[in-house]
Amino acid sequence: MAFRIAVLPIMIGVPLLAGCGGEGLNFSGTPAANSPDIPPSTAAPLAKPPPVNLAGRWMFSATGTTSCMMTFGANAPDATEGSIAPGGGCPFNFFTSRKWSYTETGLTLRDHNAQALAQLAPATANRFEGTTNSGQDVALSRP
Image 1: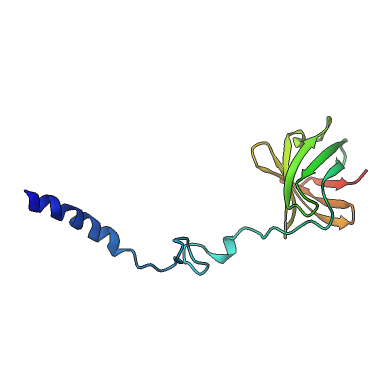
Image 2 (image 1 turned 90 degrees about the vertical axis):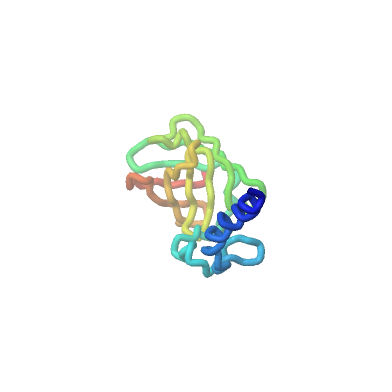
C-alpha cells in the first residue's frame, strides 16, 4: 500500500511534464518574444507620448451634431493615457467618455466600460481628427 502511494505522484506527474520542453519561455517563466504562443502581429501597439500635452480642456465635435467640452487628465506632460471628464451635451454616446490612450496608432477615446468610442490622429498642433466605431467623423480641438 505504501508503495502505491509513493508511486502515484510519479505516475501523475510524468505525463504532465512530458509536454514541457521549456521552449518559448525565458528564465522568468514568461513567454519569450519568439514564442509560438504570441504571434508578433497581435502585439499591442506601442505607447508613445502624444505630440502635444493632452491635459486640459478640449472641444469635441462631430459632423452635423452639437459639440461639447471635455477635460482631459494626465499625470505628466508626456503621459500616454489619462482620464476624460465630458461636459454636458456631448453627441452620440460620448457622454460616457472616461479614458484616453495614445499609441503609435493615434488617440483612442474609451467609455466607462473601456470600450473604444473613437480613434483619432493628429491633424495639426492642437487638433485631432478621426472616426467613431460607426464611421462618424469627429474632431477634438483646443478652444
